[in-house]
Amino acid sequence: MNYKNDKDFALEKDKKDSLKDFRTKFFIPQHKGEDKIYFTGNSLGLQPKRAKEALQQELDDWAALGVDGHFEAKNPWFSYHEMFKSKLAKVVGAKAEEVTAMGGLTANLHFLMVSFFRPQGKRTKILCEGKAFPSDQYALESQLKFHGLNPEEHLIELFPREGEHYLREEDIIAEIEKAGDSLALIMIGGVNYYTGQVMPMKKITEVGHKVGAIVGFDCAHATGNIALELHDWEVDFAAWCSYKYLNSGPGSTAGIFVHEKHANKPELPRFAGWWGTPPDDRFLMKKGFQPDYGADGWQLSNAPVLAMAVQNLSLDLYNEAGRERLIEKQKDLTAYLEFVLNDISERIESINFEIITPKERGSQLSILTHGSGKELFNKISEEGVVADWREPNVIRLAPVPLYNSFYDVYRFGQIIEKSL
Ligand SMILES: *Cc1c(COP(=O)(O)O)cnc(C)c1O
Image 1 (tube, rainbow, N blue to C red):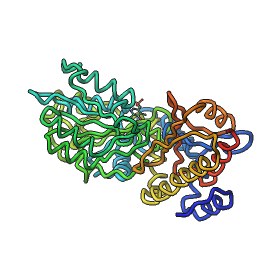
Image 2 (cartoon, rainbow, N blue to C red; image 1 turned 30 degrees about the vertical axis):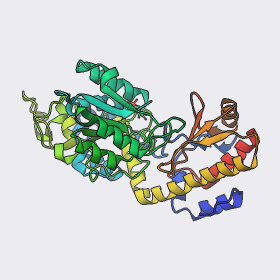
Image 3 (cartoon, protein in one colour; image 1 turned 135 degrees about the vertical axis):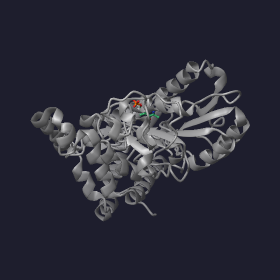
Image 4 (cartoon, rainbow, N blue to C red; image 1 turned 120 degrees about the vertical axis):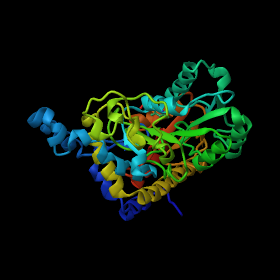
């Protein structure tokens, strides 16, 4: 594609964009009477305009019906989570029985590891990416300690080669093979939150299974961002949050995937709760936990309806836009941002930044800033750019296809130039 760093070009791209109307379905934060350039959909997705209406429906039903809302609300709360299965399944490439919306991401990782991290004999290790998102690091370390294992010995962390910024597939594979039958679990971020690198999930799963390990992914930065095929890749389990690329609101309900091959294993150890039993049994108040079939068998508590009301609508927006169209626009938009950044750094000598995101990427580009990066970041923030700064020197930018435009990218380039 031949891109141009100019206004007419960007506006023309927007005019031809079949998803352009979706931007109007979101609130865009404002700066001096203009739309901010919001490039942090990888951290907190924007609010769909109909969020209030979706919430209001549940508040009204609660006001009018009280407890009877469990069965008589427009969307009965007793079976509320069931609406999410087919919608989420499309987003992550799964069967409906393999997914459920529940709880919070870190808590869900723990619950899934209770079932899927079962160190035994010499098969005791967990392999993850180095500098994983802190919550994942803490979860993995504490799981190891919970089993009486020392993380120093039993956690294998993968780091890029000296002088490189992201992991090479061949190095990941080699480490898995090297760990061999000492490996109990591989648990890696599907998209690295820092570099934006998309991990070769299919390949990792294949090689992980070959050495006899269980393979799970933290899909916080992958769900709603890249094309996942969790079922076909035979991933054992995955978990994600819904407030990043799924635009479900701060702290909204997370989601899990458990592959069909584990759907009917009541013998798998798990930390259970009443919502994990089959719906017909749920109110029988029986003694003795029997898990429901599939991912639903990992649920504990009844659905947090107020948090999920927005997610329900956001998933409809995602599916209405359609995964294929979103990914097609995403590639174009990210490539345009890359083009604009490269154009600036070719023309302006004083600029000193480097894109550290590989070609295997989703919406995010991470820029390593040499020199006065923080100063540049502060300046663009004052000009209405919402990006994020990660110590020591990285700016993360995520133009997302649902509501960002090519004109956003062009304006971003102008602001960068002005700020230099
Ligand atoms: C955003 C994110 C989290 C956040 O976890 P919560 O439990 O939702 O607070 C955890 N892990 C990764 C990889 C993330 O990107």
